[in-house]
Image (cartoon, rainbow, N blue to C red; front, top):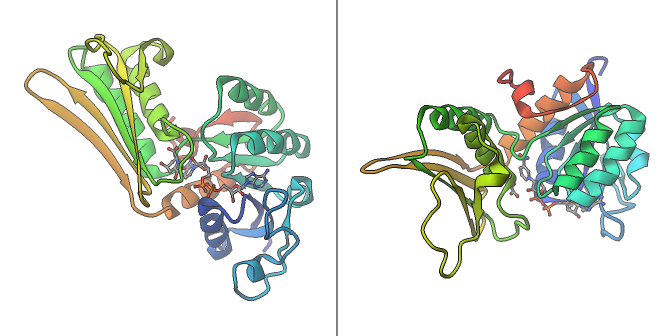
Length: 270
Ligand SMILES: NC(=O)C1=CN([C@@H]2O[C@H](COP(=O)(O)OP(=O)(O)OC[C@H]3O[C@@H](n4cnc5c(N)ncnc54)[C@H](O)[C@@H]3O)[C@@H](O)[C@H]2O)C=CC1
Ligand SMILES: O=C(O)C1=N[C@H](C(=O)O)C[C@H](O)C1
């Protein structure tokens, strides 16, 4: 285990938490040093393996994040914005790499993460997959090549349990299009059309969200012009792509200077 880094997974019973535990456990570059769940969760105080109906692992489920952060070289966090913010205070104090997959932050919450990143390495992305991060780059280039004669619409679909919209990925794609056009997304973002909306405003970037069933995550960036349409699409069929990206970020973060990084840096696309 000399070269293996110790990882803590927050929110271990979640859809992503389970996938992260599996991915870290299977890795020869990292090992699990602890996991957490929210206070009151039935897994708290139990052995992780037994909680999932398997054999004992010796890894206990804690509801106190500090218990696991002090043992970890990297924390992987796909929980809620409030929990992630609380974790960021502790990872900054412990100088521990904090990989954040959580989405749905307010601008104020992101500013708080910027402050924590003055002391520790934070890698945060609304989508940790290689494919989506490449799509972000492509969307920026296509937006740069086209003018506002092409209307941009970002359409995303997710499972029925997702609580935030637009998705973190849709916002990454919107930011990329805005960057490509040299505009501020906040000035041109058009979300949640309903009723007598009036005609589409030239240059707006539209967002639409579909929720249903067990859709892992699908994103289209549509450039709609007169007589033609370009559609850039990513379809996720397995949450393993996000977990593998998060583990890669945790390994990449070791030895980096404090800062608030994205997956673009991890993947060498920055
Ligand atoms: N960046 C990326 O690549 C991806 C990001 N996500 C994001 O990750 C987040 C989680 O997604 P899911 O796993 O689908 O949700 P989930 O609801 O299945 O899991 C979240 C887990 O966090 C736990 N939790 C809540 N508060 C906690 C606390 N204070 N301490 C410890 N655990 C706590 C919950 O009990 C739950 O088990 C969402 O924001 C989602 O959008 C999801 C997939 C990929
Ligand atoms: O909640 C999810 O499931 C996902 N969330 C991320 C997002 O908000 O974009 C990434 C992925 O699409 C799955």
